[in-house]
Length: 382
Ligand SMILES: Cc1cc2nc3c(=O)[nH]c(=O)nc-3n(C[C@H](O)[C@H](O)[C@H](O)COP(=O)(O)OP(=O)(O)OC[C@H]3O[C@@H](n4cnc5c(N)ncnc54)[C@H](O)[C@@H]3O)c2cc1C
Image (cartoon, rainbow, N blue to C red; front, side, top):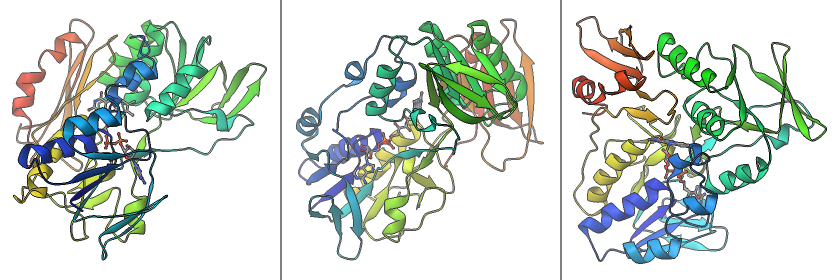
């Protein structure tokens, strides 16, 4: 019994560490469908130019984590169901009882329906295993087509271009990182990546991927075709809500939790890429750290509501550094953009009363303003 955590990603391991800070005796078991290695997921999109193989990204093994945290880690064990009344989870091999359950099951990659005889060869990278496969597939290759000009697609494009690949980035958006920043900022990033040799195909989508000899022929809706040795999809992640929904927990875009990270079922909590807090889905490192700290206290007897300051995200595009803190959904304001001498853009999202609601900083000069602007931004959860 004790605390049972499903998932050994950043959320699962961090909440275990936070619980231990308050209580060194409580039983903690983590269950994971994968091998339980601790690794830094953000390195998946900038590991290539750093020469990092999947093995090179592995930090501690499940056994090492178990010893360091004084917990039990069950690897290669998938949780298949939750009986919230009996406080028991079913796995693919047995059943486990819990007093308190934490769902830290992460997100799933969106899979777009594609035509073509090689549609199934399109790769996605959200786990170490997928990174290992991707690295293997691009060994000896020179051209990679990337679906999705968002944060992760641009990071991969920068990383692979630095590694000598010809990258084509395709997406329906008007400019890169369209959901996070205004056009002038997106264009500045696009220009810097284009100068590295990245080719953008915007305002269109991939319709089909077909084998063409040793390569792939990627057919776009605008009629053009691209030849590539590998195709990577980075079109977005969605919270993994399946297990929670089947167990009857309240879900919307993510598993719904209150400020104490409690789901709609007694004794069941959730955090990380799988959750929605106050309607917000925040699939980034910093929200997980804040949530884990609050949940560690709650699980050990001090109910604690999570608060989150403004948490700008650094986009790993060294060709043109970017920091974004988009305005809250529904926040009313307008973008005000200032061009910088180095070609970057300092964009402020400003309310009618002049208060700062969000920022998008591109290029080294604007990025230097991060700390000062961060102080002016409203907290994400006060
Ligand atoms: C390529 C990439 C780059 C990124 N870069 C950045 C960045 O620069 N900055 C930033 O802030 N964020 C970044 N992020 C986001 C950040 O990495 C994630 O928010 C964070 O790692 C998510 O951690 P998690 O523990 O919630 O999920 P995950 O790491 O996905 O962990 C989920 C865990 O749940 C387990 N699991 C799932 N279902 C089951 C089941 N049924 N039974 C048992 N186990 C199960 C899985 O095996 C896994 O152990 C990036 C993400 C990606 C994909």
